[in-house]
Image (cartoon, rainbow, N blue to C red; front, side, top):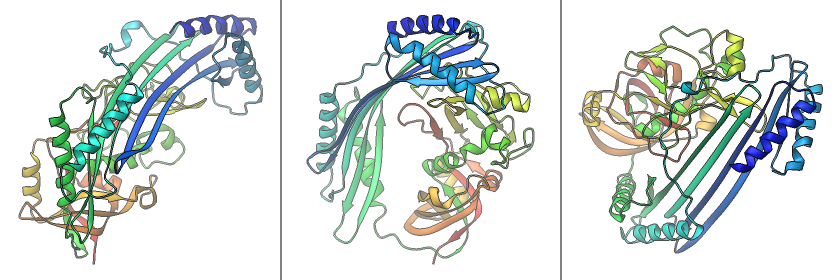
Length: 450
């Protein structure tokens, strides 16, 4: 981006003029298009382009910052001046840090993927074409059925006084299908999606639509379950939802604030032997691969939990300094603040097929839907009580659908109680952060039904 090269030169000159030795310029730009259908028309459409330029500097040991969306050369002197002024009123006593840089070879090479943002017309046409496929797929398709298409791309540039001059680019596109079936007595829903799919044949879309319809149809006639203890198999997407809900407990900033029960647990057993949790910025199944974090630190694949043992928390520069360790390269970037993030964060798969896992469960419940994590889960204590739906397991076979039961437990206990995992991981999803998990068997869980 030639514009960024011009702006960083001006910022360098303005910083030197102010006597600032350590500073950083960070620019992020995002563009996206999305269309969604309802009945026979486009019901929602959005197209956005936005960029933000962030400047941070150290003045008398304090960190000052300022931001702008106005990428004008004349704005840069004002940007630097505002950051200096902000530094003078900062009351935080934490040591200000601008990353010192790393050797070029420390940055993992990222495969170059050609991506061009589709036009609005292409997105609209794809959404409508999917709508037509949906409505032609089953006579029980009802209002509420929706389809859509989206595409997005982002660019990031980071330059600082310590020699960093980094950039990354990524883009992705996809489609989604939400089915509502009406059999005359009740309505049920099912959904599926395709990612990086615009060049795939309609047969692939039809396959996903058929899967969504099958999911909805299988829910018809759902009954209730009795309150008790059950062998529970969490379908992969539900295990992903659980992991996502309690993700922040692995962030060092949370343990340092007393908001995670993993404080002081590094090196200790916190999960079953079968549990290994990995954070991989370069997962081949994720088209968004990121060679540096929000502070410019090289990213790397690491096991956060390995065979049940907590190997590390996730750090940025500041939280790492507090704990006297090296950063893990997991800094996130907000408008001005530095936080913590993951990249592709997943529980490693097991060796059983789903069929074998269900056979081992025997009699129990296969949980395929959970809702209300925002109200029914406590990210600090790990406790959860979630309304769920799924299917009875009878001698290891999927049986009758069931609904409106509550699965209750504790995330930290759950990690220890998982006995087996299946061998499927689905890394599908829109670009960026991915949280993934296989199906998981948890014997003897508490279930509240009728």
